Amino acid sequence: MTAASPPELLRAPLVVEFPFTRSLGPVQSAFLTGLREGVVLGVTTADGRVMVPPVEYDPVTAEEIRDLVEVGTTGTVTTWAWNGSPRPNQPLATPFAWVLVRLDGADTALLHALDAPGPESVTTGMRVRVRWAAERTGAITDIACFEPAGDGEPRDGQAAPHSGEFADAVTGIVAEARLDYSYSPGRAQTAYIAGLSEQKTIGERCPSCHKVYVPPRGACPTCGVATTDRVEVGPAGTVTTYCIVNIKAKNLDIEVPYVYAHIALDGAGLALHGRIGGIPYDQVRMGLRVEPVWTEGGRYPDHYRPTGEPDADYDVYKELI
Image 1: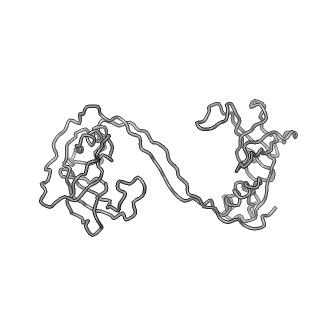
Image 2 (image 1 turned 120 degrees about the horizontal axis):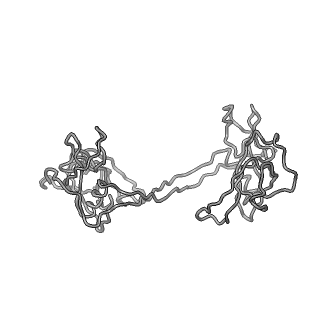
Image 3 (image 1 turned 120 degrees about the vertical axis):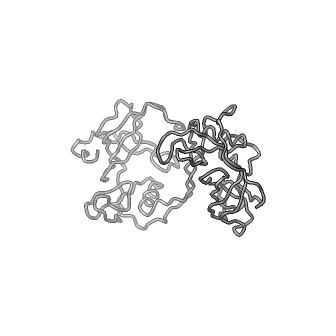
């Protein structure tokens, strides 16, 4: 079956996010705890440079370094870029400058935001100072931002040795990683998704090797040519291989054990995966003939169940394992 007309390309906003938890070594623990206490710490390398933010290993010799020093809370902008449209969760909600600031006593620069009225007020070499957050918890956001400092404001001077010891040290952090983007599945997978909305499975055939790809990829990865001939496959298929799942996944309302299988739909040139239901997990086998089970309003088959047909011969599906 060849589709009559291509559907409109799909596009949707997509958000990927997860909390990343990590423990801190003695250097990073001291740095973040120091920010909570209103102190900026750096580390001295083997060649005498002071690095802020501090690192745990010398970038030149790769040796472990632990010599902490306190640097100033004022510094000099070494370079900058204006951000006229802040995104959610950035340091400031109003337009600001991203700046690299070399704090007094440091030899490297720290990246942060500068609160400035406009790009015309920001220059390389300008003097700035830390603006501390009203509530500090031991994170880089304890520095709310930088703000301009007067030319006559005294410099904090040279770095001074620091033990790195604080009461109730911060030993771990949770970083909320998040990526917002607009996703389009492209021409081939748009047709595939549109077909699923009608409880059909649409693949595409390679004009050279004639393999039918499901889900379609828009091009044959073997021959390197575009696939435009749409073909409806299935709905029944054959279990080529499978696994028994014994560990319950978070937020997945399926009781264990259950079977997840690769299923070669009739007419398809490769197998897709799906859950097997309607049969005890220990009776699932290679060659089992199955058909999709759809729930009302479902966007894809909920699971596959046995058709009652005789098992497929191994030679029929051996190339699809």
